[in-house]
Image 1 (cartoon, rainbow over the protein chains, first blue to last red):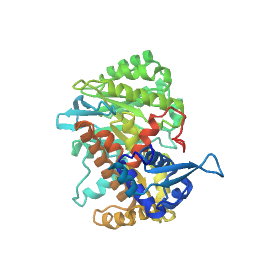
Image 2 (image 1 turned 60 degrees about the vertical axis):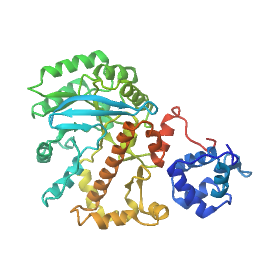
Image 3 (image 1 turned 180 degrees about the vertical axis):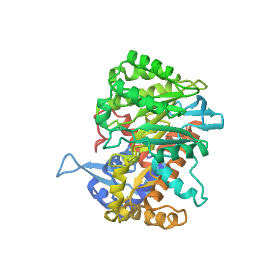
Image 4 (image 1 turned 120 degrees about the vertical axis):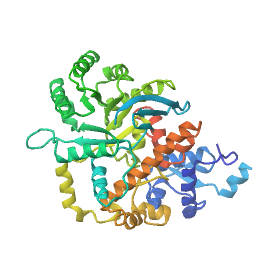
Amino acid sequence: MNADESEPLPRWVMRKYAQIWKIKRDSPFTLDEVADALKEDKKILLVFLSQLRRRGWLQAESNQDDARRKIYRLYSPERVLEVMN
Amino acid sequence: MKIEKVFVEKVDQDSKFVLKRVVTRNGIFLGRQMPVTNSLFNSERARKSYGLSLLRSPIQTYHLHKDRSTSAWNYDRKFNEARQHARDNNRIFLPFQQRTVQQLTDLDWATSEDDLLELLNLGLQYVPFAVPENATVDQCIKELEWAKTQLNGSQEIVPVLSSGHSVVSFRSILSKLWGKYKIIGIHFMSPQTNPEPGANLRDLWDLNSQIQEGQETSLIVGFNTRKHYHSSKVAGSFVAARHGIDIPSQMQMPPENVRGMLSRKEEFPSDDANYIYDRKEGGFNKASQQIIWYGENVTQRLLSEITLAERLDQFQAFSWNDFMGQQADLYELNMAILEKKRVQQLIESKSRWHTYLLESNKSPGTEINEED
């Protein structure tokens, strides 16, 4: 699913989305960066990012420097709501 | 308090979570209850002298430890006080001989029989009988038949199987016991520790959810559950519930270790050393996380609000809060099962519950990664 097709998020995912949006807006970030900023467990964040991506709230790209890692970018709430409507 | 009947009230067809109803002479209660454990009994004892309210739970457990010098189970004065306290508050009293992993591995029928007889002679209503991890179905049935001949009056046996039991016989033994005993104990080991607990706990979940609504079943007590599991600190009460446990009785520290910990109390002055239960997440967090997530130090607020007013010390205040929060969440889960189709929604509202559910649904040995 991409931003042309979005779904509502589970409550906790929405809450964490709001926390990250406050810090990162639509700038790119890595898993380690958000884990550090939110002091959150990586296992939780992996599920969080997976839920965002599957529901069309997040863009994930391969990291040029390390193929095992990804670079993430949040879609703005306005954009997601627009797509949902 | 004596149980007259345990039956399945409702099975959520999507999630397979089961809600049980327990009928006693004193009334009815739903399954999935936090018990009052040794440490919570200490807190209640402190409050009782000030006439303050106690925890609402129909079950009180007491974990016994072996005396290091004599190797005998420690039935001290506190054990008798706890038993009287349970009686005074109309609770089912369940003692449990808490064994280390090594003691559990070494356990044989002769030792288990001796331990049972000791408890029987104390005149308890419910008497646990530990099943050695390598026991076969036939041995188990034979031993339980023998145990029945030793009972006095209305005493009842509570067979206790280890989740580390040999996978060859765990499911067959459990199937034979299911519904025949009002209470079945599971010495709960984390499904991630080694393959046996994982496979056995999947069987436990499976058998638990196969009983039809209205049919008699057993109340499953998980002894030795942990406060939390994994780096995510998901609540032990949810991990237990996810594997079909109705009553999660948390592992209790031996008294000598508690004394050691209290003497080193000054080493734990920081709020960040303490994890407290967070109902929003369904797990435990600490002050540094709360400040980022909620903009306030919840641990500090809890301590300033609870310790003095409620006559609890710092550690008692944490465990009191943890009990109340987890009990409220288990109650919410019970209610969600009654109101069809809300279970998944409830689990997905809490980060730790949701993540644990996804993880436990995955094939053994596979981890959640960035490709998911």
